[in-house]
Amino acid sequence: MTRLTRTIPALVLLPAACWAAACQPGGSHGPDDAPVASAHSTFLYVWAGAENEGDSDFLAVLDADPASESYGRILSSVPVGLKGMAHHSEHVMPAGDTLFVNAFGAGATFLMDVSDPLAPRVAGSFRELGEYTYPHTFERLPDGNVLATFQTKGEGNRLPGGLVELDPAGRFVRAADAADPVDPELRAYSVTPIPKLDRAVSTTADMFMEAMGTSFQVWRLSDLTLLKTVRLPEDPLGQRHQDPAEVRLLSDSTTAILTTFDCSMYLLHDLDADEHWAELVHTLPWESYEGGDCAIPATRGRWWVQTWTHASGSALVSLDVSDPSAPVVVDELRLEELAVPELTGPWWPHWISMEPEGDRIVLTSSEGNTLYRVLVARLDPATGGLSWDETFRDPGADVPGVTFQRELWPHGPAGPARPHGAVFSRPGN
Image (cartoon, rainbow, N blue to C red; front, side, top):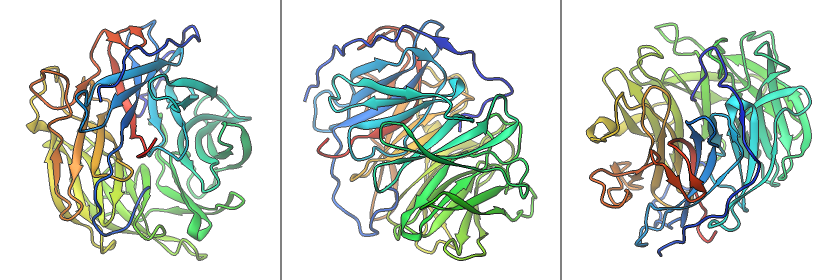
């Protein structure tokens, strides 16, 4: 997470008008274990936060067809009329044409219609829903509804939020509070539905970095009943259970592994029973939040891919989780090996998302550096090996990746932007 330090960035409202795109193209967690042929996505949607006052956060659409002469070019973009710290999108592009994106610093969410990727538009927006404030994570349910976490209730960061179910148009369906005295410092951070078990699992990290959650919560998915809040067991250092971050399902769509921002992995047990519990199964090196963290993971078959930052460097790490009780590191793709001209601080990889039916991984950064770059890596489905997609780059650039440090966009003149949530389109869309 790009967590906030003490204060929320000031909200800047801009005119609501959206400009027409000027460019034209030149050309689930946990699928099956067996390697499959790559089915390429055509577009890459990148949610980016404006840096300059007076500019707007926006959704950019990039050419993601490797066979295209304009591979990696920014084809279109649409501003949302607000500068609010663009944060997460949905973790993968859902079926259909609407993508939820979140401007966490403004407590705002936008529904982006990409039915015409060359002319995306804002289809709707919302902020608080009832008492629930600061929406964060969005996950699609089998019926097309969206299960969201709202970090807080009311103003300030005093009360935990909860889970809110929305219809595909972003309208309120129902909600449930996350507050539980088992963990007084919990906040509703992320959520993972497990439809096969009629369960959902949420995590408890605080985006404002004021509280220190140490638990996960198990919910009955069909009616959003909170079944239990479970404290994570401490590791020998006594801190690896802090800041529970993300849960991902493995290829059976029921086995769940939880990660913390301090780089531990917990296997969750008996989610469909009465006594849920967690087992610490792996840790990556970690010293402090000043020196690094582990953020968004992704799964593909038996491979787990994890963003990792440490005082000694940063990397994408792939692990074999065919035995989920004993993950094994199989490869590391070191980011410091890339010589990027605008780099003035350490790499801090944060966001990744897998191509829905392919082998590519989109990667963006987090706070702690001045990178404005979208990178694409590849995961070998047979070996778990990682490599950079060297062809995904700006025209004439010496290094891979597409920079968002520019002054002209398809929607018009504007300054640099920080790319954050990014997802590939589904093949055929």
